[in-house]
Length: 103
Image (cartoon, rainbow, N blue to C red; front, top):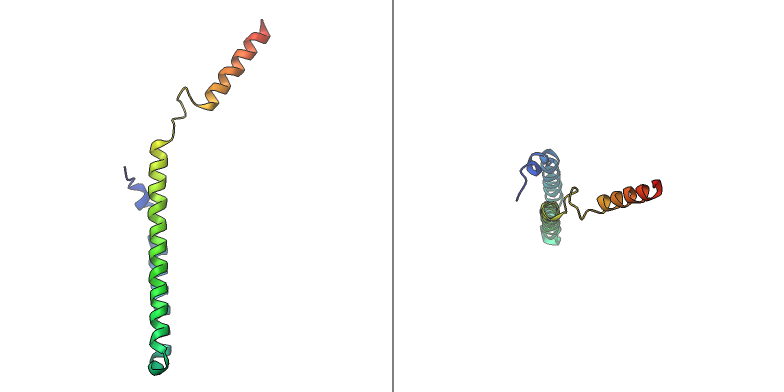
C-alpha cells in the first residue's frame, strides 16, 4: 500500500535546511529580545516559535495527504488496457468506420 520509493525520493536535505534556518531565526529573535523580558520580549519569541512549529506541522500534514492521495488514486485508477478505457473504445469505432467506408 505504501510505496517506499516516496521516502527515497523525498528531499531530506531541503527539510533539514528548512528546520535549521527556522531554528536559527527563532534563536536569533530570542537573543535579540532577551534583555527586554519585562516589556514582552519573551512573548514575541514564544509567538514566533509557535508559528514556526505550526508551519512545520502543516507542511508535514500536507506531505502526508499528498502521499495518501497519490497511493489511493494510483490503486483505484482504471488500467489503460481495460476494455472500458475511452481510448480503446474510440480506436475501435474508428476501425469500424474505416471498414464500412472501404466496402
